[in-house]
Length: 593
Image 1 (cartoon, rainbow, N blue to C red):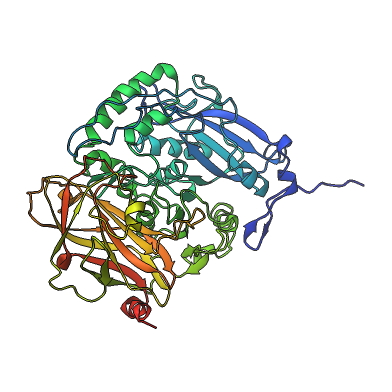
Image 2 (cartoon, one colour):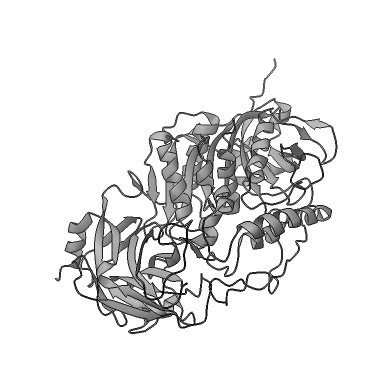
């Protein structure tokens, strides 16, 4: 009598891949590395760049001929980053329109050993019946090339890896060798995920339309380097990194072969970036357009599950919103998960599992008919989002709010039309933080307009829009806007949603467009309209909604000497709030008990 042992295969229950004990023994996993050849040369050596790739797979892919789909993460960070040396960020204390002094260029000391580039994703996905692949992006780790921070090679590099997993690109056992490696254990179906820059790369790969990339789950991705380092024509830093810019990030990640770094520094950092990034005007140009993935989405077909935090002031929530909107227009299967926290934060594992189970394993679990939007409400846990038909909430409509004097103390914000309230002037001074200004009972450094105390909760969902008419006593000025919930909670344990609802920044010189700025005539009024960051927040009864207008934001903008005066025309300035239930809901919340 003979017994045949059952082969280990992926197991699915309730539309999700389950942990399989036979796949869950790390000491049996097969772990190798290789180099995949790309279609570009960005380190100037006359040879096509090769990307360093690692593979972690269950032993059954070797002993039983099992083929599995792939979860793939690529990153510029796997091999270490540069130290934060004094002077490595741009000095922001200077006048607008004047170049800052030179900065220091730190060098990365590469870390990591072969064959494993990273251990991320492995414990989550290998036991569930996936192969996990990592790669170092161009000019980082043991990958050839140069970083470009959003340039074409950062899209073509993961494309080549996906093609290798489908037998359409060449892989080699060594960086310089000719012995080929084949992905005979791959089904050819690939999903990508990652957070921040690691979440940008899945989108970059998807915009190439590469066959085999079936689904992506970008988490807090940077989808446009202009929107990361600029805002409506204004030079604006990402939160927590005052003075960072695209060339600073280049230095931070440039961990590739030391002997080849000088070429990239000369060609990319000191030529392309220096001539294109424009810290003087902050205008949108061809350099930034090339690094905006929204402009490259036409070939994209990979199913998209976006994830972002509404209070992410590093990679702000507009990055996911704009891509999600375009994906819907193109008919790409798309869902979005938003939470109320800061940078990072993946969707619940169940949501990710259903996404990959359907699009990579081909299981008909109905995920494509699930709710399109999932919002973690203010007091809920990240793994307990509330489902909505769509984001923004379809029941939200714009309500125009008007400014009533006097904002140097506390003016009124009301749906009632403002008439003959005249103009009010603030004086720029970056020494007063936005937090301080929002809590001040009066200040000549900001204008604050506040609703009556809410008697009902108010649910805001979507993009708040500001149309503002202003003049300046100087040809250049910063403009910063915060939408706040008052009274301000100054306690150490204040929730991240307690105070700031959303924010926005703009350069009044760009009142026509973000691509065209012009010096303001002193005292002449200009009208511009721009969006604040997308949000979905319930402002509880007992609070007030406040619009705060000021100039330089000590956490985000260039910081010129105090003294610039901005004069706001109250009658010609309108804040449009996306309120669930519209004007009627807001009026009910503003009624006195």
